[in-house]
Length: 447
Ligand code: S3P
Image 1 (tube, rainbow, N blue to C red):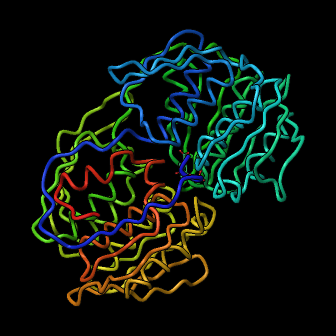
Image 2 (cartoon, rainbow, N blue to C red):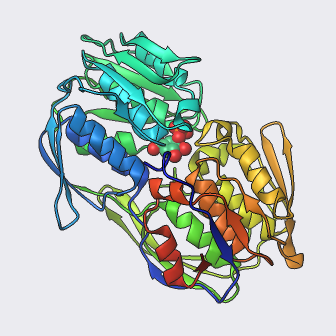
């Protein structure tokens, strides 16, 4: 596992333009959900395009430990033989989710609706992340926490509810993981489980639940929210899943293509779910030349190709209301903002503090060590762009076991005056296997 292997430093330096056509790996959010929900059907589901990153492989291992059969064929498809809703078997050992908050929180939700006991653990980064937010509603549904580290953190042992209760839960934080944990537990409860969110978050769980035959209705709630009602105890039916390319992974080479002079890169089959594409909206507002084509529906999601060419960017204000649709993209946006003319104000970034690292502090540190001025004011971050003066670079960035810091810092190095070095590239494999090779194929100088 990455957490135990020795660090692998890497540096990025400016070189020629980035050019070519690429398809980045499958969407991480959909990959986790496809495995978990397929394991809760009765029968066999075939998943194509699954992200084979460490985070998702840990979820696959957890599904096996809970009694599902999960097999990868040589043609790259994944076959999951589910055990049905409420059918998980008690795992023989602790479930280890490595670096993945999504895998861990979603599986805790799924286990909370079964009368089994399981221990959940992860690496040093995941052990720091808050689990109370999901344990509160799951306890209301009848699950019991038998053991936990201080403050409701991992490792924790949960006894799922034999007869889970349906609840109506108003989510106190905009979190798709929290929403999904409650819905997955609600699958085993009789009657209706309702989640109300004040700000709509990614809706892949809802879409896949429908895909597998559950009755689930999502309606607008207030200005930006949703009210989601799931009818419990469905028989989930296997159905093939096609995982589209991950917009959150495409974000890194896309921004690099905007920044490296003379670049022209096309990204194929990227998911365009509007609850995921806040970064693309923001980059366009900054003046980015991003051309969308070949938009079509595929596997229950809209996908499109994006052609990205080098662009002169200007600073903008990013409203807090956009945060849920680009929550994983602020690091790479901050890199784009560093090269832009003028200031970029990013509002409402509180949730960044509880990701794989404290991303608010880590982003500021990444930029400052490379000569950029950054202010953090409460939950807002202001990046003072260098524009025509260029980004000095030359810094060594601490990645804090966070894949997105690693990739963002490297993208900065491709366009800055001096190389940018990261202390460890190993965690990139949690979400973007083949990242370094893909970037080198486009012409990036990484070594
Ligand atoms: C995810 C939800 C988000 C996001 C994470 C993936 C998901 O986390 O940051 O990378 O797949 O549900 P939160 O639910 O904590 O906002």
